[in-house]
Image (cartoon, rainbow, N blue to C red):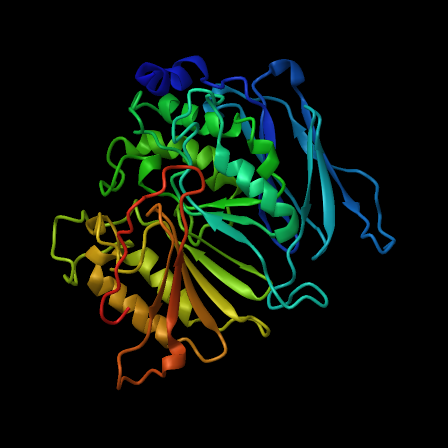
Length: 406
């Protein structure tokens, strides 16, 4: 049974033949598509799209339009290809089709600051942590992901605009690492997309941030090995169809969707090793100077009229309240965290600031009120919601306990 759990999936299901197409970031005027096709007999691949009329009988141009052709795919990109559909209309339904027998739908976002007509809300899904057939069940398909099945049951009623996935899309080192090269990491990504349950949750766009198990447990080694090998499929499968990076070649992202703006942090690539300095050292950084500056600018900037929320997305908890593994979280980077909190408290009234995190395999909601007697009103309180796992083990014993001030 142990051998089955450890070796069956990586050795017998490398998923080199998986073929799929998925939607990534969708703005008010464009949509990104990722296509994977290892069968050269399918080349060239044609990508096309059309607008779909609303149920009310809206008159639209339903003719199919070409996005382009893919003449060649190779192992250099693990047989993936990314394309962008431009010149779309806000709040409109579209269908896409790929000539290798994949198709789907997506809905464009509202213009910045706006919501759907008559609907004053934005719904999206957030979670983290996936490992096929984990917890282990010898009767399950080796690539089964029970969390996908549960999520798919909720998606029709939620009508979510997108999934914000907060890291650990793969677990390269669980239950046992099978390699340190790019192919070992690529195989883990392919196995998730080859899961029989993946199509059931592919009906909405997926946006991603990076966490440790996409590299190595509690990773704080910046871009040293094995980061380059880990970054290869992360860039091919996720970065390529994520929102635009804040700066060229960076791995943190920002976008606006109707009444909300989002900043997706990279808490792995730029951090000071957690054991190098005390947690309150001014020299210790989770984000690095460039990313920190970009985040503070995001929090300080004026948003379009009608914008009501700023979301900061971090793969690891912002709170100090977790009693286990806190050295890997923001609890070990308190000076920089305080700088960020003070900027969050200074966001003008009328715009709420929310932190979204994952990683802990538990749920928690935390409030960060300004210090009593400070210049900030209690209405400036920041809230964090931590949700995980989507399909991994859930901690049976709570490790979250409130501390003074949060």
